[in-house]
Image 1 (cartoon, rainbow, N blue to C red):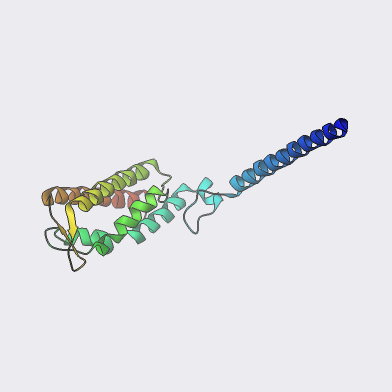
Image 2 (tube, rainbow, N blue to C red):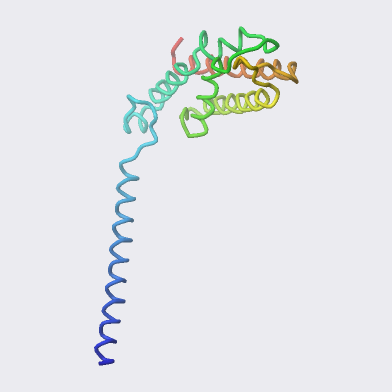
Length: 180
């Protein structure tokens, strides 16, 4: 009787080991297939071949996506250029900045051109600093608008820095990507 139990125990261990091995092999193969089929290309019209062989076209797609989110004459950039932070404002005017900030945190807007990507990172950090400073120095009014309570001069300096970095990125991207 003990001999039969030992055979069943051995069979159980072998069976569980085989199941574990099949699971690991399946997981490994599935992960490799997933990695081979994935692409880091974020632009909608960009194929894997474009990404590998034509970085300028890839960067053009990323730049157009960037300009659609933060256009030079509308949205958040227009809001920053034309609003004085000493009066009440609605945060909807900053939606583009918040969206760009979140997109960058999630790996969007990565240029293949190192210089453009470095400028984009500088802009990202300027936006981060501005939004954090704004959030800590402003208070929501009863009407749903916001008013800066403290450090208004500091915010104006941050806005100027942010806009200079934005303008520099736009200008360089237009030159490098031959969009002028």
